[in-house]
View (tube, rainbow, N blue to C red):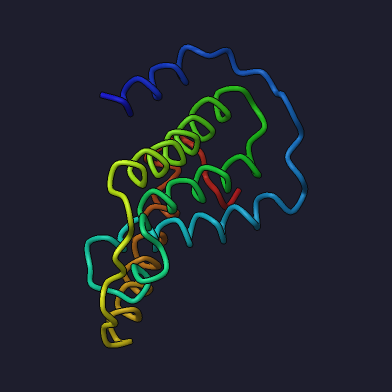
Length: 141
């Protein structure tokens, strides 16, 4: 429901350019979105990454949103990507407050980290190369 509301607000927002993204923004976006994809799938696997990040998926959403804001300066993008990034940060704070002290998981073999990175890169490439079909915009244009 929350994602539906964010997307419907995006569609209802008039597309107005609010800032000019930096020239390097698209390159930074590609890197940040890749990191976001890796972090997004991290909670589903036993990896050492979860020893450093309590909420890797929400951290991935935050990085993904910030990355998109570096390449998109119009109002609709700010509503969608900024809204999801802010939601993820608030969710992290609320979960930390609710759950109390964090107990870090035990170390796992490094090959599990390699599998996570490979799965994240493959997921990123699938979405990146189908981005035009899925969302009507090519990140490589």
